[in-house]
Image (cartoon, rainbow, N blue to C red; front, top):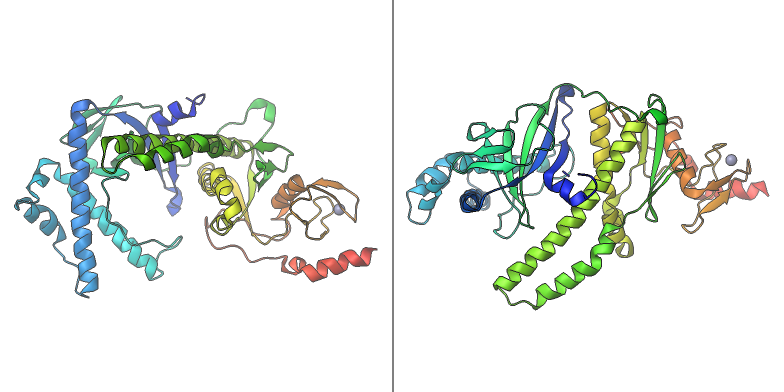
Length: 436
Ligand SMILES: [Zn+2]
């Protein structure tokens, strides 16, 4: 999602998230713009968000009840939680907001519920989907307007029962959107997020003239912590370590929040301040990742990156913050989306491929190296290697070594390892011994 001199200003005006759909080259893209509701629009917006939340929670309660009692899901749920509820004293204020918003909230819940069941039964590909949760007033708020409830203008978006809301359009929408989600984040900022269909492939962005032709060029990307990543071209991309820089301020804000009395105005204010700091870190990181991935995709035809087990690595408590701070998972997601969008080949290298052990020059396998070994000499051809550059080069060579490109099926399971034998530590050690 997520002007470029000051990332915060940029992000506040535009954030683009790519959503991947592999059906016949039709892609859905998400365009986010910062919106600035007027003072008198804040209350109707809050009301709409509140009512959408109540409808969601009421319906979810009925679903859960039906699940526990092992009865069928109530069929006329929209009539129960919207139409009939409006007639009761406790929910009569539901009629004060656009019914489109309420219906949409219900449809979103149904989708979420179905996704959860499909995922549980194994009918759904990809990551496991959790059960829908009750929405809280204190977290990020969102409401969705269907096609008949909004219109997009050049500098504003008109929402049903709310009116024109000023919108900073930093780049025009490529086609007419099918829905808009209005988001209020924890830092109190408002965004309009449009889903648009991009039917044809957008031509790849041009390569700067001094960089040569992107056709046929490839790059291996080795992710690290000292540097954000090391490219097979020898380039080392600095790790911005944004969170670490902000950590001091965040810690201070956290301490202040802890001291504030519960349910006080001061507490609210401090909570907002902390959320703003977190939002800033997130925006700066997203900006960095967007710029880096765009450049890599722009400059190369083939990109190879390691399939890191980020969730597993984060369990290492010493490294967890540094790793989540680096944003590897997001980097990979963006790279995947952009390669898909611009027709580039992305090679996801099996995580057990010994990229740090192979000599990128002669292809022979050296032994396993400890993490502190930054430079090593190949015993076969005497080439001196920088550990990371060598690994990055090997990633790019992975396909030639028998690995498969995963760009067609997107995020499938890892390809089975063609070099399983070379992973065997005993055999490599033996090979090394036999040299002397
Ligand atoms: Zn060698």
